Every structure is written in C-alpha cells, then in structure tokens.
Image (tube, rainbow over all chains, first blue to last red; front, side, top):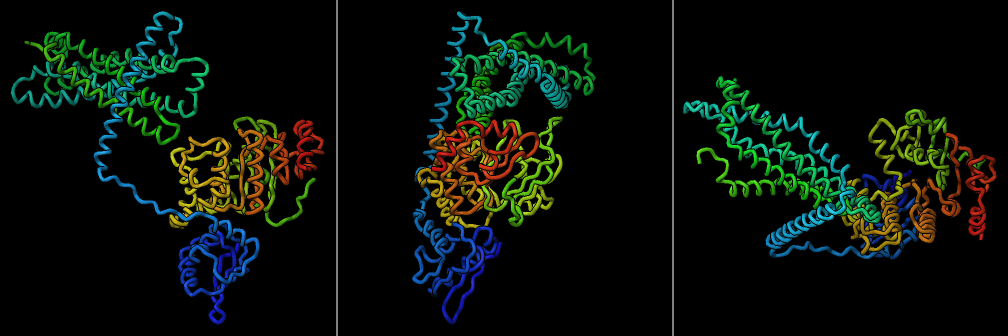
Length: 370
Length: 262
C-alpha cells in the first residue's frame, strides 16, 4: 500500500500523480490533497497520471471534481485507469435538493396529528368490534377458545407482576400516609387518616398505578411481540394456516388483561392500605386494630366496585391499544421502536382520560355522608 | 494438492483454529490460507461449520483455539485502532442482506463512508451513486426503503454497501441463496465483472454448484472438522472423500461444468 503522491513540476507545468489514489491510500490527507488539486487545476497544467498504482472510484471522483467535471486537455493515463475515470464521469450531477418547507408547517403538522389520532381512534374501535365478533363466534364454537394463550398471558401479565405491584403499592401507601398524617395532626384530625387512605387508594390510586404498570410492563411487551411477528411475517404465516390473528393473538391478550388487571388492583390496594396502616402506627400511634375496624365503616363498599370496574376497563384498553400498535408496525426497526413508545404513551394517556370520565359518572357513588 | 505456491503474504491466514460450542466440536486444528486475487469457494455439508469459519474470519466469533490473521494482523487484535483499520479493508455480504431497515438504500450505502468522517456530503453522494451504478441500480432506487426491495435488489444493495469502502477483500455468505436461478446467474456475473474491474479477493460460502462453477477460482471443502480438499474445482472433484464424492458426484455438476466450458 503506497501513499498517494502529488508533485508539480514548475518548469514543464506538469502535475505528476503517483502512489495509490484510493480511499485507503488517501486517508486523512484527503482534504489537503483536494485543496492542492483544486489550486493546480486553476493553473491548468498537463496531468501525468501514469505513476498511479491503484485508482478507485473515490480517487477518481476526487480528481474529477478538481477538474470541474471535465477531462483536462492534456492527460496521460493508463487505459485501465481511464476506464475508472469514465465510469465516474457518467454519473449524473447531484441535483441541489431544496429543503422543502411548507409555509404553514405547524398547521399542517397539527392537522396530520389530528388525522393520525382519528385513524388510531377508529382503528381501535374497529379492533374492539372485531373482538366482539370473535367472542360471538367463540360462543358458537367453544372448542376454538384459545385457552393456552389466555393462561400464558394471565401468568406473564398477572402472576409475574405481583411482587413489583405489591412493592410499589406498599411504598405509595407509606408515603401517602406519612405526608397526610403530618397535615392531619396539625388539625387534630388524626383518625381521619383511615378515611383518606381508604378512599384514595381503593378508588383512585390502586387502579391508576396498576394501569400504568401494566401498560409499561405488559402493553409494551405485547406491542413489541406483535411488531416483531409482523416484521418476520409470522402473522402472515398464521393467516395462511387459516388462523385468525384477532382470535389467536389479540383476543387472549385482551381477555387475560381484563381478568388480571382487576385482580392486580385488589392486590395493589391491599398492599397500599397495609403500607398506610404501618406508617400511621409508626407516625401517629394509630393501632392496627382500630384501623382495620374503622376501614369498612368509613369506606362504602361501592368504592371497591368502582376500583374493580376501573381495573377491567383499564386492562381492556391497555390490551387493545397495545395490540393495535403492534399490528400496525411497519417492517423496519425504527417503526418498531416508535410503535412501542406510542403504544405505552397512548395507553397511559387514555387510561387517565377514562379515569376522569369515571370520576364524573361516579361522583354520587360511594362517598360517605352523601 | 493445490496451487498454493508462495504468493506473498496471505490475505486471510487461518492457523490451527479449533472451535467448539459446548461439547460439540466444529473445527479441529484447521488451516487455510487465502491469497490476493483468489476467489475461494468454501463448501461443506450443513452443520459442517462453514458459516462459523466465515464468522471467525471476519472477527464476529473468537475461535476456541488458534488464530485468524487478516492482512497480516490478528483479526481480534488488542489494539482497537488496528481492529478498526482491518475492518475498513474488507466488506461483508450477509446472507439476508442485513440492510439497516430504518434507512433508505442511499443511506445504507453511504453509512460506511460517513463513518470515516473524512468525506463531504457531495463526495459521498457521488461515491454512493458510483457504487449503485456498479450494481446496476439507479437514483430512483436509492430512495426506496429496504422493505420495498425485491430479494435480488436487497442482495445488490448489500453488495454496494459491502463495496462502499473499496475493500481489498469481499466476504460473501451464501451470495445466491434465495434468488431464482436466473437472478442468481446474473448476480454471479455481476460479482465476477466487479472482481475483474476492482481486483478484490473473494471468500464465499455457498451451497450452489452453479455459483461455485461460475465464480470460484479455488474451492475448499470442509468436512470432519477440517479442510479435506483444497484446489481448483477440477482438482477438488477428483479427491476421494465421501463428502466430496457426494457433493460433486451428481450429474448436475457435470452439466454445470459443461455449460461453463461452453
């Protein structure tokens, strides 16, 4: 491997090139060489390229550009290297690409966002409709029930999530109880900690925490799994075997989440209340017996039903949204990553919106003293 | 055995390589040299470790014992600078293309050039277009995404990317697998004409006799954990070994040989 050389003979006005004019041979000296070549070609000398050992297309391109995209009038070159130059010279010029910028860019972007949101909304509704049709069909053909997939998802999304949900529920309960007790003490209203924790955790925090965790833990996994199955054409393979993707892939996931999420809500709420009870004892000396005795009196049973109903609907929402995004991944890695991100973000946002709707429609239910 | 007369330093030098996966022995004390200008076809039964050997040659896999040297340096040299410079001197064509699915064709081919951080975008553009023209693709194709390409186009784009840095060595893993015979023949012709024009060394793994006949100037047969035959195709076919007899013994090969001779 010989380095590229460039000598200029002033007397004869000849530029002599030697060595390897290749990407590797030029290496780091490339910018300097280009500048020198451009300078020389303005003087329009005769060019002697016979000393060149190897010439690759990058070397040829460097020369071609220095000559202003035309062959110099006097050029001494071997036949083999002339062919390399000719191949390069046949290239079309790079068209100057104008940066496309629409005058109403932000408005267009907003419109596109709205259309995307509408498409996702309609797509999700269509998917729910398909699931209802599948359920009706299953009613008539109970042997087709995808039980194995259902129980697998139930185990992965439900049973395996128990430890982390217990931990988070417990810690949130401790923090909430600790912070509230500081305030309540100032008013001498210590005993109301039971009302506060009971309503807040069972009705609101439990379902919401579980929904966020399930979206992050199971929803993302479902989107990624279906997305990879799309990329590797496994879903198409299933279709050619006459297996319905909604029946075999989507329905068991959604049904399993519909069952697992309310159970996780109960588990999370129990852990939260336990945490709150421990903190209340340590902070204010409120006895466990008093706490357990008071809880059912101040928290009407309706709150538990509301929490369970939220659990079911959040589970279905997370499952449907995760599967929708998974089935709409395009076959490339970038789309897989944006699909998974959108799936989790959309699921959590939707869950919070639906939670607000729940709050409005259940405002007269389950409140003590109303 | 073969025409391995001393031709200077080998481009690839596999010395005493042994490989085992768990308790399974793949190669045992295997030696193989590839010299500049060789077009070596590596053949072997399925599971004989052809692709494993190829991956060891390019440093994707470390052999359990022995050493692979590329261009006179260990391919797994301790110095990251040397490792990097070795990797800029060869191009690899993967069986499935291994194009970056998130990038259009143009950026796939431009990627190794940009990684050098030496060239300006104008020069990169011209270099990419030269490479695409070499593999008979045009500017319109350069905007397509990998998912929109046919199998043959994927191979050609992958070849353009492998050739982007003007490598001295091209490593091909099953170059014609998944192409119909017509396309495969076209792809073989393309590699052959590029090799004649650019003069790189080629190592390839293939199952396909037509590809072997059409391209390889040298054939090495891998069986029983070692190279059992090494030489020109004509020499290798005469070697008396069960695998070789089986692989080349069919009438197919005679037909292919006759066709090539014509």
